[in-house]
Length: 59
Image 1: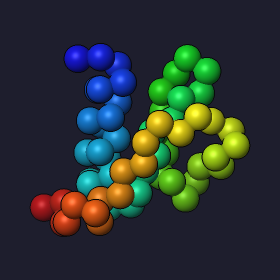
Image 2: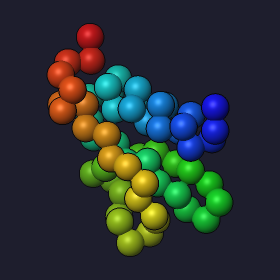
Image 3: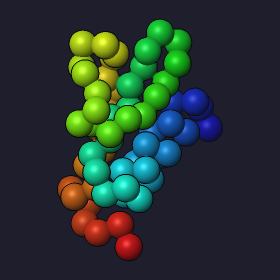
């Protein structure tokens, strides 16, 4: 599994666990995930946003 695929999977699971939208982003050579409300878009390259409410309840 590639680093990006692994990061996407973890970001999705984190959004479903926390029940808040999270953003997967790239900063330089690194990938990261933060709650979307805490991220300023001009700082990083946004790769994807995961909203747990688009898919129904986490449990």
